[in-house]
Image 1: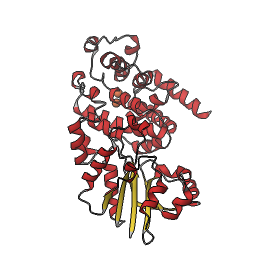
Image 2: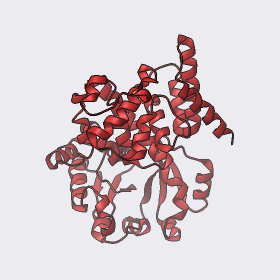
Image 3: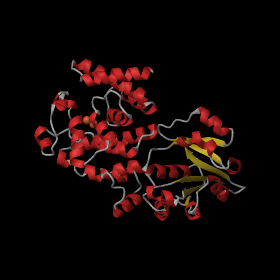
Image 4: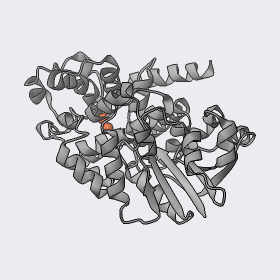
Length: 376
Ligand SMILES: [Fe+2]
Ligand SMILES: [Fe+2]
C-alpha cells in the first residue's frame, strides 16, 4: 500500500488543503490527515481549538473512505515531532510518504531527528504558487532524505485569506461548505468586517469592492513572501480606496480636510491623501504603516517602506487587472518586490506618455529615488 501523511495546523481547513487531500487520494491508497498539536502558549494565536479543528476535518472528509483524520498529535499534548508521527504510522510492508509544501523544502534539513525520519518516510513536495522549488534546496534535502516532487500543484489558502473573504461574504469560496457553516454559526473570522460593513456609507460600489478584495488577496501574498505583518497589510488594503467616491463636502462631514496637500495632486490621485485621513477619522486607524501605505498607493513615494511598497504594487497587479503586460509585471513582483516596483513605475510612465497626460511630480521623484536605491 502507498500511504501519505498530510499534516498541518488546519486552523481552519481551507479549500487549498481540502483539494490537496482529495488530489492525494488519486495517488495514494490511504491519506492520513494529521492536525498538529498547538502548545498552550500559542493557543491565543489560534482561532479554533484542537477539538474544533479535528471535528471540522472529520466532517469535511467523511464522504472520502480513503482519508482518515488522526488525533494522534492533538491528543499527544506535546510538541508534535514529525519523526514520532512517522514512526506511529510506519508499517514495513507499506510505502509511507510525508507531504510538504514547496515553502518548507528549504528548511527540511533542520527537522528533528532526520536519522529516524529518513528510515520511515519519503517526502512528497507539492508546489505552492509563488514558492518555486529551488534546485539547491532540493539537492540539500536529498543528501538526507528521499524526496519526490508531486505531479500536481497546490493552491493558496490561509486564515488571513479567509478573514478577508469573510469580510466580503465570500467564505464559501475559500473553505469547504461544512467549515463555512460552522464559522458562520459561531461568528468566527470576522476581524475585518468592521471595515467592509461601512463601504456603502462611502459610496463604494460592488465593482470597487471586488477590486479591494483582490488587492487584499495580492497584498497578503506579498506580505508572506516579504516577511511583512499581514494584519497591517490587510487593513491598508481594505482601506486604500475608501475615499475614492467622496467629494470635498462629504469628506467635511468626517472632519477630513481638503487642503493644498490634496489639491496639489491630479484628481485621480487625491483619494490617497483623503483616504488616509478618512481611515483615521472614520475608523480610528492610527498605525503609521497602514496610514502611509494608503497615502502613497497611487503615486508611490520616495523612501517607501515595505507596507507602502506592498499596497502600491498589490493595487497595480491584483488579479482583475488586464492591461497589456500585466502578467509579466505580476510574476516579477511576486518574485522580487523591488524589481516589480521598477516595472510598475516604468509602465505607468509609458502609459501616461502614450495618452499625452502629465504624471504627478511625486511619481517621477519616487521613480528616480527607487532607481538610485536599486543601483546600490
Ligand atoms: Fe486607489
Ligand atoms: Fe485601488
